[in-house]
Image (tube, rainbow, N blue to C red; front, top):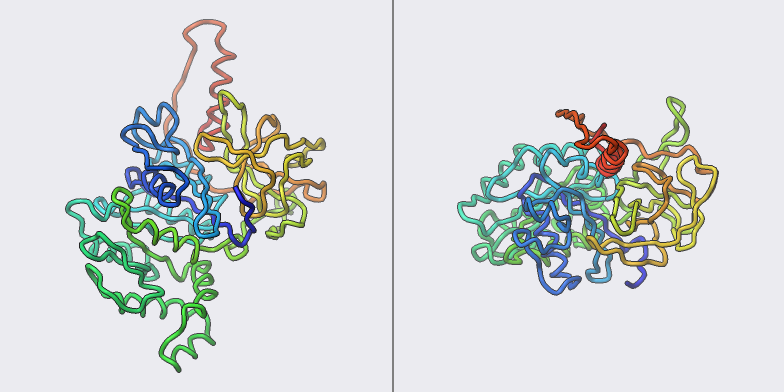
Length: 422
């Protein structure tokens, strides 16, 4: 894979309720971007992200899965997350690794429990948010009513950035395009509403807009990013992962309008311990000391323990010497990976914004910070709030003497799921 600068990187987590079609959407985006030859099927167990045997059996995601691909000179890291409440820890953990949370809504079922929860968790994490309405070609769908419900539930800042056209077979842009035909609403009105919302965050631009009556798209980029960062704008877009409608348009939105690591809200790091800890922000500069956060642990039966991390500062290279948290002894990065579902692709270096993994480092734990200097000791990422476990079980072995094996299995579950306790 070619090297990309931090400015060309986009990081997005697909979150939302179960059966919203996040895995199918991820598969369709991979195919549309040319990363795979054709889309697999959740029902047939042939998708890139749902590769675990239990996921294939149950027909839905149990773990978050990572993919990456190129789109028009941009490098997109995408995290597909489970939507059912039992596995919400995997979805919440992904929010620590991305600049944008894309909340996927099933056009048939509308706003559901996890839709509301993920909107709140993403807002609490100060992430840029967008809403993706999937399955627009399904039967008995009332898209105008759903859009109105979204605005009533989450606020008037939720505005369509595109609209379905020609009976849901096409998508028409409403941001760069001031006019056109759509199945409902008005492209002109949607364009005006977006521009009005964006210019509100820039007084000088608003004055120019009031004077001229129009603003060029180039002038809107910086205030658009600011509106996203402040939650003043939550774009709504329409897709059908099944028939391909809106996929290219969604990829263009991610590449051209979603924030890169230089533009998104910086994650809240803390230096020090306890009440004396001081908040600071990492600088997405590849030349500075390394700061990377481990947001996911994978126990692979063949590769062993992998720590999946987002690089926030500096450059992680193969053969780099890194410390884990406050550890006194460094480890050498023997293998550096980009993840493509269950596939591990060797990488030479990862820059700020990249998401990768390293293997066979026993000291790495969930939520650890990796760094290359003792100046970065006692640095943590402000912890995410996870729901408390609501169900308890007592377990025992069938055979005496298997207690150690049972302990090891439960410990692996705890490493992989931040909501599991034993």
